[in-house]
Amino acid sequence: MQIRDLPYVDPGLPDVRSGPRFLLWLGRRQRGGQLRSLSWGLLHFVSVMALPYGVGRAVQAVVDRSGSSLALAGAVLAVAAVCIALGDTMLHRTAVTNWITAAARVQQLLIRKTSELGSALTRRVAAGEVVAVSTGDVEKIGWFVEAVSRFLAAALTVVVVCVGLVIYQPALGVVVAVGVPVLALGVLPLLPRATELADVQREKAGRATELASDTVAGLRVLRGIGGEELFLKRYRRASQDVRTAAVRSARMWSAITAVQVLLPGLLLISVVWYGLGLVADGRIAVGELVTVYSAVMLLSYPLRHFEEIAMAYSFSRPSARRAARVLSLERITATKATAAGDGTLTGDLYDPATGLLAPAGALTAVVCGDPDVAGRLAERLGGHPAEPEGLPSALLGGVALDEQPLEAARTAVLVQDKDPVLLSGTLAELLDVPASGSVAADRALAAAESGDVLDALAQASLDNDPMAAPITERGRSLSGGQRQRLALARSLVTDPEVLVLDEPTSAVDSHTEARIADGLRDLRSGRTTVVFTSSPLLLDRAEQVVLVHEGKVAAVGVHRQLLSSEPRYRAVVTRETDAEQQLVGAQRGAPEAVFTKADTDDIEETA
Image (cartoon, rainbow, N blue to C red):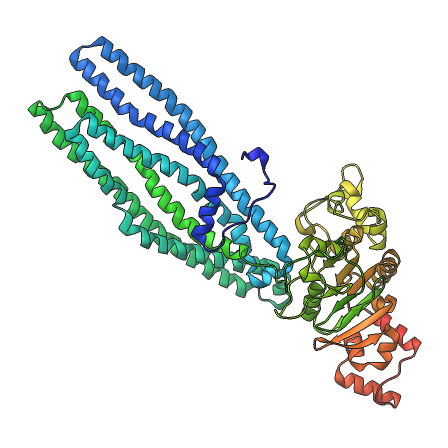
């Protein structure tokens, strides 16, 4: 797999039973890249370790005054230099490829899981944790995956060098062969503590990221209640906790690095001291001592990869554990998914939990006193996991949506929540979504009353073309009402069999809202549409209005009828208090006020 071939056609089915199993699965999925990296790493490290042999031969050739031996030593050094350059270049290339492709695989898996779970993901996992996994954690996971091949190449090189030294000069080679395992394993007692501190650092960093993400998401509310300073103090404390944990972790890793420097130094001193005695006794030549000395000195280079792999694993293990936890979440289904008939879902939309029935081809408005209940009901109507768990699935044409393949359910029912996201790009790209083709972009924009939005975008476009105008990330360059109307236009372009809208006009003025209500009713004529709203303007255009009270359907009718006959409905729509309802009833001389058409029109104008 090369970087140019990304993204993966299929990132695979990960092993998410634990963090280490997930890392092992990633490594297995990249066997080809790992073997290439291992091969180039062996060429590079072995070539580096061939330098001491060439240097020793050159020194001995000078001592022996042998020109041919000196020429041979020069040839060995030249070949080693070429192999070092080639091996290092290709090792870096393959290692970076492994890193990026591993990180890309994890990101694709996370995107697939996010698409599968929808907004239910952030209710089961903190939004900050999702952000941490999809940004910093994927890099650390990729680092470990690519470091494995380099570590294996370094470990094999160390084994080859030790065996070679024992064969080349047994007296000194045995000393090196005994000392190198001590160098490699000398830091093991420190690794558990270093890993523990790294875990603490990552946990605190994740909490700080979650706090920052939640603060940014609720910044407007915080400003409204004056809570900015409170959350700023909390984030400062969280940041200081991360700094303290990072310093403690760095101290432990610096101790490990110091041990990695100290032990090779002691081995080098031992080899030189013992080797000088052997030279003085005439048991070895000067060139052989230089070769062994240089080999021991250069062994610190491959041995550094032992420290790196320990560090990479300690940092990637909690990251892999978090990624595995997110990827292990499943879409809640009652039974195994099976397609219904030809795969096309049509008919009435029914929610057994509340008794809500939205007739096929009609515009149904739903009134809920609790916005959270409305949001959960809207998602359940789209076949998303029930909240709380255990509630029966919504039915479309008598078929349970959560028992259908995800693609079929999403194609049949589109849910637009109360805070839709606009991705960065042009308006044309925003409206380039999977669609039936029956609704053109201009018709959808007109129905969503987006004329002033198009004018504003045309002014921001270089060629006065609103469709080519750039839209910033999450539509931050637009007002709340403009974002809401563009999101509605995008949903209308899709033209699904069933469209569920949660407060689609909460950020627009009443005149625009009235025109949107007419455009929505006309454009979606003959198609099933469910709108969660408490706006009298939208409710008056609906063919059927359903009141959901305390989790159950309490009343069904049309807006004007319910307004005059259902006090609970009137309380939600007009925002009347109990005292105001009693006062209105007393003034009209009846226990329940009877509203005339003129009264209803007054309520709509004030609302």
